Amino acid sequence: MNIISENTAFGGMQGVFSHESQVCGTEMTFAVFLPPQATERPCPVLWYLSGLTCTHANVMEKGEYRRMAAELGLIIVCPDTSPRGADVPDALTDWQIGKGAGFYVDATEEPWSRNYRMESYITEELPALIAKSFRVDMDRQGIFGHSMGGHGAMTLALKNPGRYKSCSAFAPIVSPSTSAWAQGAFTKYLGADQSVWRKHDACALVEDGARFPAFLIDQGKADNFLEDGLKPWLFEEAVKDTDIDLTLRMHERYDHSYYFISTFMDDHLRWHAERV
Amino acid sequence: MNIISENTAFGGMQGVFSHESQVCGTEMTFAVFLPPQATERPCPVLWYLSGLTCTHANVMEKGEYRRMAAELGLIIVCPDTSPRGADVPDALTDWQIGKGAGFYVDATEEPWSRNYRMESYITEELPALIAKSFRVDMDRQGIFGHSMGGHGAMTLALKNPGRYKSCSAFAPIVSPSTSAWAQGAFTKYLGADQSVWRKHDACALVEDGARFPAFLIDQGKADNFLEDGLKPWLFEEAVKDTDIDLTLRMHERYDHSYYFISTFMDDHLRWHAERV
Image (tube, rainbow over all chains, first blue to last red; front, side):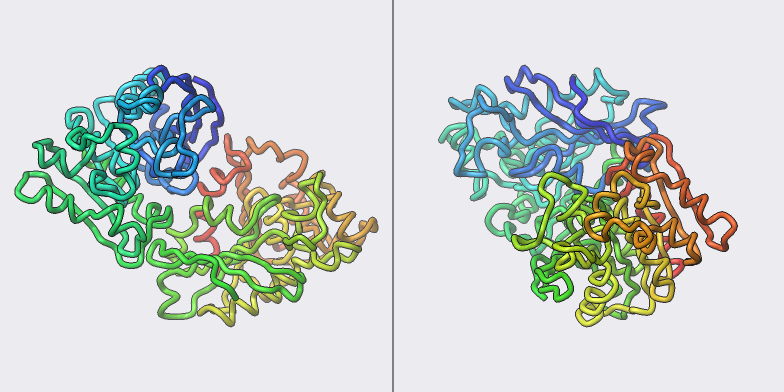
């Protein structure tokens, strides 16, 4: 693991690191915030998955999570959204496919399947590295994210309810199978058979029996992507008549930006701290 | 005034605007955060002056001021650090002179004097525009900034104690006349006669009799620029035997970055709210 930067913040440390990923077959970069409590004892860890076009850096710079994470004693890990590098396939004219658009799935189709294995990376390889490198209590993990990263957090939680104790999302893509934002990437990564897509779709997972205790979702009503890409009411519909406890909050005037995310970040960190 | 962007955040609104500046002879961009209270009554305003290489955007994205400003009911204005545009002179090979390095002075030397009039811009033209465009209580103004912007905030406060009720700084250049960071720009903008520089140097202003009630200064001990460019102990020395109340806090492990600024932002906003 290489140290790219380390900066003291809120009594803790915001670091950026890179490593050679075996799973993705390329160098991967990620950010870790260690709260001051991590110098004394293993702390719970939250995985923050970012949205389309982002790297590890966007939420690290604009998400405003450090003050509350330092107060609550939470480690925050922010991975990249896809593999990177000259040898990694890309769709240069489509920001919804390729670099910056990994969708947190393991691609099965060529040429994507060589590098685009973000599900295994986020749930296996990176946690092993984090557990080895920092004082982390791996029995206390939560996962959250924004937009494509909200999709990632919700699907990975539904598929790994024993691993994650809490899940929340900002403006998530809850139904990528029917979302204009995700169908292109799913076709490229997973093939045209839409029955395969159901394992990577929060609404379909619930319909097919997957369960997770509770979700917090915040969504801005002035989000330009609400009707086309996000449609949180589809998840509300999916969890009806299940024992899944969904808190869906719709906010007047808020859009899809980090100004929205940072406004509700404290609430999400408290949600996780109460559950991990 | 043109609206570049408006985003809801923390119940208020983060805007970015531009206008044709008569003083600087070019289009200027600035950011304004309006707290939720500004829809009900005129609110106090804080001017945040940024450091070398920055625009209005850096602190807007990374400064983490919105949550506390919304709580305290403070309007935050973040101007650019220099004039911009194809016709504005620049020093392409020196980041400490020209664009991004206005130093909050009115240049007297050609070719800089045509556009580099940041002192008049910050203290006259922009306040008039802000007062006209937003619900601001102009009897309640404070000023703060980082590095070169800390220099700007402190010198403008010392020269305008009737206008500003509060002043604070993160890692300010307190003595530009003796700072490796500022001597080049001062020579270009103000000429070689160093007696003129004293009107733009916080330490010299105090030595020459300028007064302001109180300053809060935070400084990281791991700041790479501490010994060469910043030297806050020179200001501590200058205010000794005056009635200026200086709170200088030196912080172990903190550097010159926005991770440092954001950590202590809440304290600065409270400092101003108690005084404006």
